[in-house]
Image 1 (cartoon, rainbow, N blue to C red):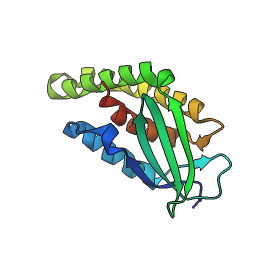
Image 2 (cartoon, rainbow, N blue to C red):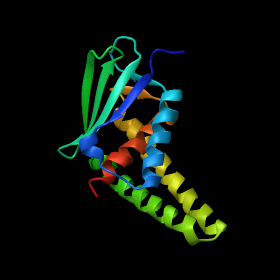
Image 3 (cartoon, helix red, strand yellow):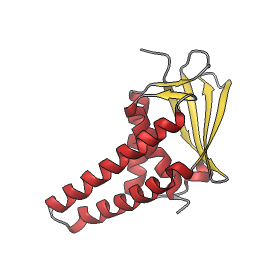
Image 4 (cartoon, one colour):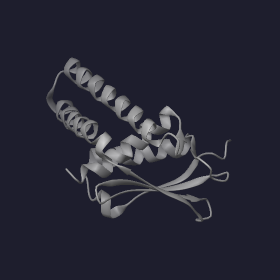
Length: 157
């Protein structure tokens, strides 16, 4: 197994806050899936594996990367601007999906889920572009990270 991977992910508790059970479940699943399979290589860093703390501070996305033993690697800070529209649209679509699951037809649920997946893919692509040259990730890792960023961003809305 490659050492260019994450072995621990922490979401900043001040950023995240309490969420409804659907969102809490998505967080747990995204972290479990991310830890099970990921490709994560900070450019210029020694070999991993790595631990990641995700936070939103002063309207900025923070990737605090450490070595497995806790030694600092680098703190990457990104503007949320390029992700803001897609985050808002995606979270709105998620709310529509959760509402539809309660009382919509299967066809309506599938249509909303397809739109939700499309927005998720778009957000993941934007995230990969933002990380390029700083942290190399594959698309599946970007998808799971995008889910966690959505969880952090939900508190700000």
